[in-house]
Length: 67
Image (cartoon, rainbow, N blue to C red; front, side, top):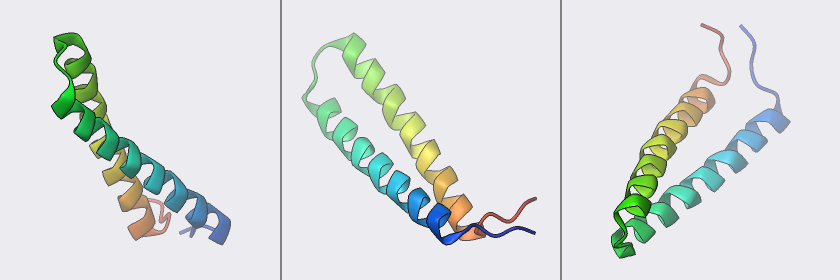
């Protein structure tokens, strides 16, 4: 089983932080938006952002162990 290198782990943390910030922004903006089409786009972004964050967390917890 391979482990992630230090630089890979740090980069994943940076991506995770960025994705978390994007999710927060989309969630806040969703409450302010009145346009239905834009609201749907934001809801899709929130959904995919949560999935991506969950996957990144799984990778970090498993430290790149191959299944």
